[in-house]
Image (cartoon, rainbow, N blue to C red):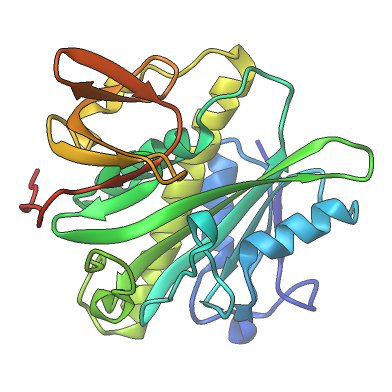
Length: 288
């Protein structure tokens, strides 16, 4: 069983009257402890970026020997993949997980994190899909995303930071990209958001850490087919942008054993380890 470690920003402990209104840290740590995860949790009301905070701690040699989770109510410098900014919804779940990265065969960790998150969200009744490789979608819009980054510690070890942003409420205010954003709920009560944020953080962190620990222990790639029903793109016509100015249209045929996107072009299946998926036209809603 893990040890509960809860730290409020600039305080070693808190009384019930000082507990943060946006998250219940004791419940989060208790849930993760019961699942066998030893964590160090911090929860500032506002920060620049939870990912940046953990990356900088690792580079300075200040990372905890436990898995670190940092959750914030607001970010003022949040970011997504390819240098894009992340705009907070009215209420969001914004958190990062930091942990040492063992020397194992590299896996598409964002994809593993995404599917683990989707599994946890569905257990909470949120009908989500994963859009390869790291976007979380719900019906007609993007619900959130995953950003994985690495830092080198002073001793030269790799430190992995996983950042996730999830719109809880007010998805219409975060439509900053090509597709409209969606949100988990339209409930406007602050207490509802605190409860939802607490449950989702506990469930998602537990699922992510369990999947990563299994991979680190065995060194084997996950069986991606176990999450086939979560795959937003299956059998759809897409355009794959390789992020170097080259576009390739085709039919999405799933994920290879190594985690690469499989694209059918004519009679040939091509595999892509990286890239951005676009749609040739307005997409139709996908339902569960």
